[in-house]
Figure (cartoon, rainbow, N blue to C red):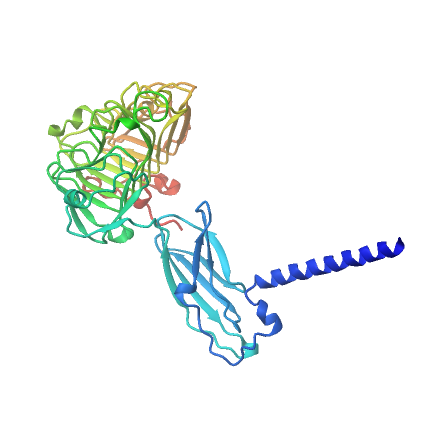
Length: 483
């Protein structure tokens, strides 16, 4: 019996030793130099960098991280990696690695450049080499590239969107390209993205007399310039005849539900004569609309009818969650909108199958918007515990009266959620008159000083006001670079 115990104990120790050895080997294998523990045999050599094809970029399952890896270079003394997000102009990594990989945050729709230098090894008399440069991006794969010079209406007539497709189709526009929209371009129920992958060389889309882009599905516009000055239509509209299959798609109500996002990012709109976004009098509910890093120059005309409605105008429907951030809206026209935002007053979340609704305006600049009118009209949101209102770090100059009151739906109630912070409500710059916001924006943070825009009538909203500069309010494009 004792002999058996002794034998079992010896076997257990042997297994533990073997497991420890495996763990040690695995640990060494991760450093990129596991072979050199046994001498790779590389001496007195001019080392060569991995080819760009052998450098692998792997995204995590949730898309928030990316791992960059490369093959072992035997005899090397390490690797010097510099990773730059060229879209943001930011160096993310500048480090020396013993191993052959590193992980870093991943941002969608960005361009990156990796410089990878193989370092020499003095002990082995191995010489390093010049860095190899690999560029890559995190853009979704494009379905097609539309040639510069195209009329987008004709292009999609000649190149129809595949029937039955339910995924987003991405169409690239060429850097610095010139395009037209000669008439109404309606994507219907197709999920479409129009984009340029180089934000510094945006293409320009020029609308004709009836030019507009419409949809009844999620739509993304990214890094594009629009010249809308010839068009009598809205800049972005919803289809006049939506597919009946999206009616009540959330399982509640009779709205035509666009389940997803209308996303307008890094765009510039010039000469918008009518509404910026319009539902075309159809009972839509857009789940989410995001306007980000975008400049909209309105040239509102009386003939467009916008003086009796709104810049974001939903006569029959509403946007369940609207966010405007890092953006500028200004009007240089001879007419004016009655509201910046107007929804049908019956519109609210529970009637379209949602549990909450919101309006969010953050870090944005508004000039000469609805000056003789009111800021917003969406009484369906007013006073409801399901409503969220966020208005922060935003500058209003020569805009509507009582912005804070109208922003929350017209009346203060303890039921909704409110967030206000560091807003400037300069009602009349000529007389230095400010809103009396205290009963609605109760944050106590409203800035009562002129932001001193450089040349607002010509579209230069560079901030010179001390308080706005110190708190970095308004659209960031008009602020000096952060130190």
